[in-house]
Amino acid sequence: MSSLHPVVREVTERLRERSRDSRAAYLAKIAAARGDGTHRQHLSCGNLAHGFAACGTDDKAALRAGRAPNIGIVTAYNDMLSAHQPYERYPELIRQIARAAGATAQVAGGVPAMCDGVTQGQPGMELSLFSRDLIAMATAVSLSHDMFDAGLYLGICDKIVPGLLIGALAFGHLPGVFVPSGPMPSGITNEAKSKVRQAYAEGKASREELLEAEAAAYHAPGTCTFYGTANSNQMLMEIMGMHLPGASFVAPDTPLRDALTAAAVHRSVAMSALGDSYTPVGHIVDEKSVINGVIGLHATGGSTNHLLHLVAMARAAGVELRWEDFDALSSVVPLLARVYPNGYADVNQFHEAGGMAFLIDQLLSQGLLHADVKTVNGTGLDGYAQVPVLDAVGKLAWQKVSGESGNRGVLRAISEPFRADGGLRLLDGNLGRGVIKVSSVPDDRMVIEAPAIVFNDQDEIRGAFERGELNRDFVAVVRFQGPRANGMPELHKLTPTLAVLQERGFKVALVTDGRMSGASGKVPAAIHVSPEAVSGGPIAKLRDGDLVRVDANSGELTALVAEAEWAAREVVSANLAGNDFGVGRELFAGMRTLADVAEHGAMTFHHPLWRE
Image (cartoon, rainbow, N blue to C red; front, top):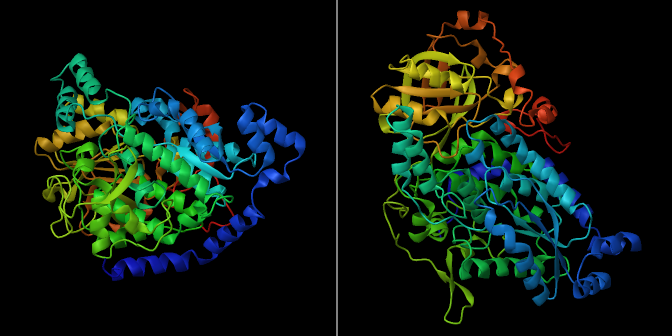
């Protein structure tokens, strides 16, 4: 293991200094919340009786005596969301394991879990980002009964893991383990699916053919196998020490998966205030673990959504992560993985090639990760360069990962990276600040300079494409898509259309104050542009025909308009009344009003610890 890379050290020190006051205040808050141990002892007899009224005889006796740890399960189970369907049987499994370990476990509460795959391109997507904060609040409600000594958090997908962690950090004095359920088996290849989508966009495939391809890709319980936000969540939880080593991508409903779940229960018992190695969530998530998360995103070409979510999760722990930190680390962190949409492989192939253990081992070898962190495993991060296995008698064990990749087309040693730098960049200029994911952008598309075509709704692009108006070089500007305008929906529906135009040889790019899916790839997209149009951001000054430069190499996002003319232009407005109702959007009006800027994580609640 090498000494820490100087740039990693420098960025971490800047982050630590910037966060000094907010982090100290957060740690003081959770120390006060811990008090003198488990809170159940302070409940009145009536409170406590309500808390164990529905338990079985043995659990009721244990809770009444107050000497055994009680584990609170916060679950995002529903059986429409394929990634979360396996959680149906987890509560009873966890209760059995807890009893065997001399503890008890209760479902503390359930949180909503929406599927972005179902709502993609639909009005319901406008609830998606805000569901993260709703999940955080639901997690807090679940834990607010003061019945628990530790938490087990059952969640995988896009907004669920960030929301669960933000909620868990509000109870940062409690230990907790995040428990994944694993990816579905590989179906039709992602490339084959993408080709059918593009053919459908061009009118060359029928709806029946498209549905057949989609159903062959998404076909079983488990996480979708492309490397989008859900699987980026799993990578983050492991590299930040909130999963057990190697837990992220083990298949659902297998003996190894159940053994890892059992181990998570045992660790939660051991880490509890009544165990022998008290380790609260608020001590695991700190400046070093957050930096490790950023590095993991760069090294794997992870989801752009984490330029929102990781910022929000860090702020919940009093850590003031900024986009500049992502940008500074990008120059020194190599891209070691190519998983669709950044390559041909899926996460199952990534896992088979060595997965997280190989990735962590390689990054540690060059000092590109903080090894001296706290984790739910009770080790530093070096304990994560191991692969979980079942021995001859079915007992869980970990063994050192191989020093060689099992598939160099998917996962590479640090001596031969796919790229010398990471996959996420900061953009800045007279259009504001935004971010771009470049891990799968072709080299000849890293700089796009072309006339703008301005849209205020993503569906307008599809109409222009069908009318044959987009067969040229252009920058698609899709504005009024930010958090305050309409909840910042993902604009993934644009991907097939823009990809078709790029494959026809046109130089195209996207500039938007909205989001793209974590599964978006080859078309250069300047996203999360801040300030957003509805707040008077300069993106609202753009007009059709303005020359726009998107330069991922230099980090430039500029309208090439004379300075005096640009200064004199007024921002335009848009009629957003259609965003205010339908599929429950009227209930989220307050969140749209409260939403912070994308750079601050687009959070809808604020705290005195957080500086603006």
